Length: 221
Image 1 (cartoon, rainbow, N blue to C red):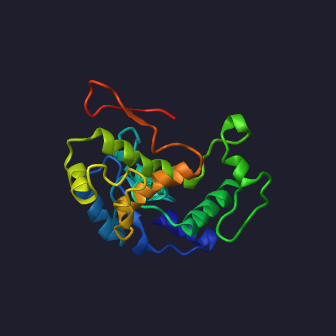
Image 2 (image 1 turned 45 degrees about the vertical axis):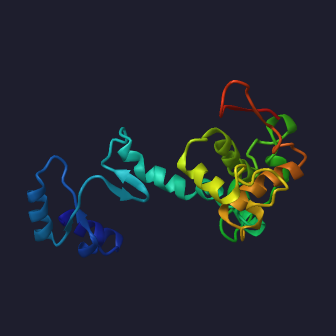
Image 3 (image 1 turned 30 degrees about the horizontal axis):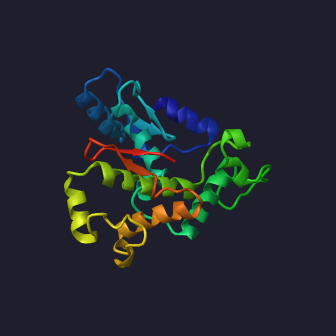
């Protein structure tokens, strides 16, 4: 406390003791709590977060990285893309956020783009950075359900889908079963295959069953 008072007089900054925490290294928690009460501090526990970084943690265990994993997941829309078909306007906003971050901008602060974003999204062999557009990522994740429907034949969720949309699950283009269901989640998944076909990729007809292996599919394209 004496050192903090010296710091206060030297810097002109006031120390708010009621918002300060006291931590002990190698000291019993009861002693830390007693000293904190005497100093008008709050007793803190290790590890704690300071400027977004954990202090007092060796960061060698998986649990130590849980906050990092949580933040990482919160910034990735993959969970949403794997089930929901994001509207084009949402994809445009998200791409804008990625584009600003890539060029070093933030919020309303934009910086000059030296290369077209469409070029950056291209594969390496085509002169891009192989980042992949969010639209492509969304379609890929939704179309993965097609593969799951054809391979996980004995699961409960497929039984439910077939009871509603028929044996083909509405995945056969032209049957109209899933696409007439008031824009359900499964309808979006079915439409994703058609969207890929519209890009010139024969996705919906790229599944073949191996003879002699019931339920075993291969994919070609």
